[in-house]
Image (cartoon, rainbow, N blue to C red; front, side, top):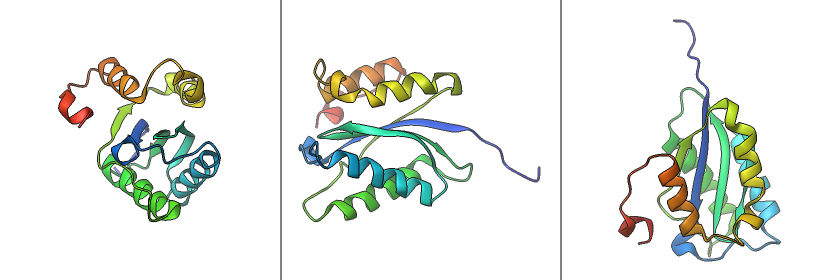
Length: 144
């Protein structure tokens, strides 16, 4: 086969280190835009970036030759450098595959994070996402 073809649509979620509220409302638009720029510069298609003061959601499409870990490492390392010395992301992440038919629903979900988090904490949201996608988890690592 002369070419590799893939449609790797991923909903990725990760938080700030120790869930510190480091992404102020004023910083959020610039942070989301910077993350989108990192992706675009490396041929990662961005559907949407959003989140809240302590975590980020991305809906992206990775190129066929990229691993999930490579893409996330690129995003985290570059955005944390941009944000400054006192900023850090947690080491881990959650990544869920998304069917092309569900992209509009996930985009709406990510764009509505502010309203969503009036009803649910990030920890509750993460557990709900893990359960929804059938991902087994150990609470001591989710909340540790």
